[in-house]
Amino acid sequence: MELFPERPKRRVDPRAPLADRMRPRSFEEMLGQGQLTAEGSALRAMVASGEMPSLILWGPPGSGKTTLAWILADQPDCRMEPLSAVTSGVKDIREAVERARRVGLRTILFIDEIHRLNRAQQDVLLPHVEAGTVTLVGATTENPSFTVNAPLLSRCRVLTLRPLEDEALVGLVERAVADPDRGLGRSGLRLGDGSIGAMVQAADGDARRALGLLEAAAAVHRQGPHANDPLSPETIREAAGRRLLLHDRDREEHFNVVSAFIKSLRASDPDASLYYLARMLEAGEDPLYPARRLVVFASEDIGNADPTALQVAVATYQAVERIGMPEARIPLAQATTHLACAPKSNAAYKALGRAYEALRETGSAAVPMHLRNAPTSLMKDLGYGADYRYPHDEQDAFVDAENLPEALAGRRFYEPTDRGNEREIAEALEARRRRRTSTSDAPDS
Image (tube, rainbow, N blue to C red; front, side, top):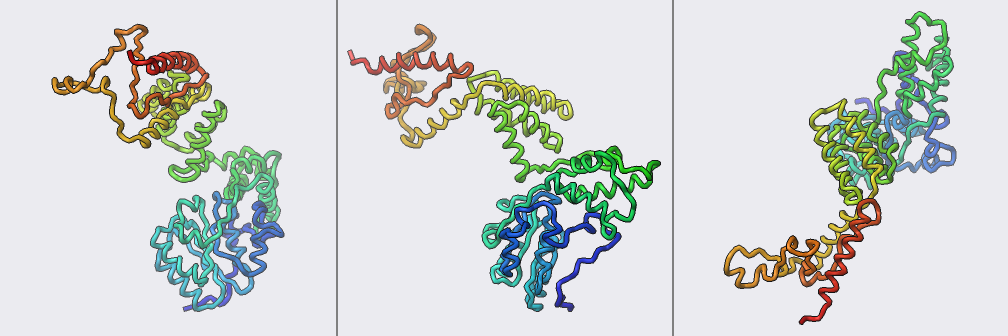
C-alpha cells in the first residue's frame, strides 16, 4: 500500500474546468476573505506557528472553502487526505486515519460537505481528532451548529467565509482572462463594456459560478458570428440563464430570509417585506409557507389594532391554497402590503402570556360560583350558577361582577395600545374596569 510519504501536489489539468485551473495556490493569491487570510490574521499566525487546530470552514458555495483547505495543507511536513462526505463512509474515514498514522506526517483530513456525515460517521472521527492523529478541516455550506454534533464541534474552531465582494470577483475574472497558463490568456478573448459587471451580478458572490460563467460565455462567443469582437454582456446573460438564489427549505438561509420577512413586516416596511417575499418565492419556497406566517403575524403583531388584518391573512391563505403559483403571488403581495402598513399591536399576544403566568402561579383556581355550569338540580342547590346576571339583560350589556377566580381578582392581562382600533378598545375597557373595581370595592349592604 502506498503511504503518500510526500504531500500530494496539485497539478493543473488543462482539461479541468476553469474554476479548478484558477484555484489560488497561496494566501497571497486568494481574493476576498481578507478577514481570514490577510497578513497578520490569526489564521496565518497559527499556520506559521505550526499549531493549527481542527477547523470547520463555513460559508456559501464558491467562497473559497476548498481552496483554503488546500492552502493550509501546502505546508512543510504536511499532507492532505481529501474526502467528500457525499461519497465517503466510515470505511473511507478509517482508511484515511490509518494512512495518517502510518505515514507519521501531520495530516489534514479534509472532508467536503461535512454536514452530510451522519452522527455515526462523525463519532468515528472524534477520537482521532482528539488524539491529534489527524487535523480535521471540514467544509460546509450549512450552519455547523445544526449539522455537526456537539462533541466534534467543541474540538474545532469555526471559521466563517463570506460571499465574495464585487471587487474580488472583478479581480478574479480579470486574472482568469489574462492568465496564459491556467486561464484564457492565450485565447485572445477580450471583454466588452459592461461584461464584467454582468458576470459579477450573475455570480452572486460565488467565485466558482463567476469562472464557470466566464468559461461558458467564452465558448458561446467563439462559436458565434462575432467571435472577433469583445465578449458582450448579452452573451454573458445568455450563458448565465436563470439565476439561482441561495436558499434552502429547512436550514439557516431559509430561516434567515423568513426572519427578515417577518421583521420587515413588524417594522412596517412594505418594500423590504415584498423583497423578502419575492426572494422566497423565486427560490422555490412553498407559497403556503409565507401565507401561514402572515396568518400568525396578523394576530401576533397586529391583533385588535386592525381586526381586518386576520381576515385578509386567512383569505390569502385560502386563495393561495386554491389557485397555486404563479398567481398565488398576487394575493400574497396584497396581504404583505396590508399587514406591513397596518397599525401594530402585540397586546393580545402578550395578554395570553400573562394569563399563562398567572395560571402557573395559582394553578387550577376555583371558578367563581356564578360562572359555573348548573345542569342538574343538585348543582343548583350547591350554588352553581347562583346570582349569574345575563349581560344582554343589563344596561350597556355590561355586568360589573368579578369573573376571575378569587386568587386573581383584579388582575389585568390585556393592555390595549393607543394604535389603530385599539385606541377605542382601550378607552371602553378602562371605563368598564373602573365600574367593576368600584363595585367590588363597595361595602356589603
